[in-house]
Image 1 (cartoon, one colour):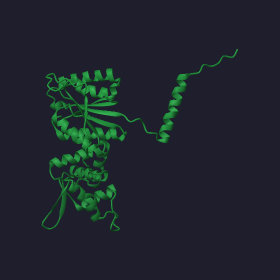
Image 2 (tube, rainbow, N blue to C red):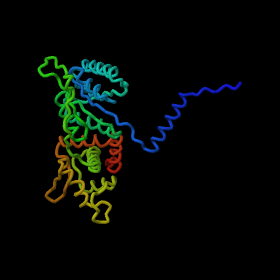
Image 3 (cartoon, rainbow, N blue to C red):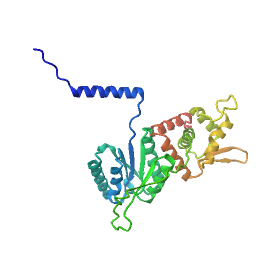
Image 4 (cartoon, rainbow, N blue to C red):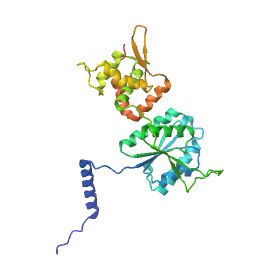
Length: 306
């Protein structure tokens, strides 16, 4: 007697799902957009960290904790993070790997900006939607978060507490306050590539200024795209270099030009504050691998003299 072979549903599902993934990659079907929440950790009540993410069904959550060297309340903060993770996993049904703990100096505006910029860059590459909780972590993180949202097109939100409540309980009826998305323009990718290379040049040569010949050498290596046609047959035209790259960076206060009595020009960062601003743009525009690779290129074209 011939016995019919039982249909293996599990194998059928696995094989067809693999076919779908292959088809999706081939046809470039967009993946589902994820909702990302960035939450600086302070000493607020735990509901202020968790409830907005639970209500909005966040797919991935970054918890920004204080760097250990500056953490006066590190033990208390670690306990808060454990509580947050447990509550999110239980109520949001989110996997623990989707709750990512990052470190930053919560009393250093520039360090916070770099941290936000790096996270936003990673998630925007995957076409995800980024929201930052501006009601937690303290005043510095709130200011840095709002600025990051305006610069890098993320969304800020505020978790309200009940007015006059000494316990600082959250307002369940009006849990979230959203803000209009105001924008601050940032340099385009080509300007940031030059900015990265100038910054790498300063590190490699241990100088704080760069001259025309060195700039032309960098441009020849990077092959940056000019906005206007070149006015000569030279590989890099100096007039276009000034118009398309140096002038815009000077207008944005990211570089300043100095000229000697003999007319010799050099360019440098205006001060340490604007140097930090440049590093924020670099953190948003490039991965650490790209930054390290650029540093290698600068070491190759500007070797140390024996």
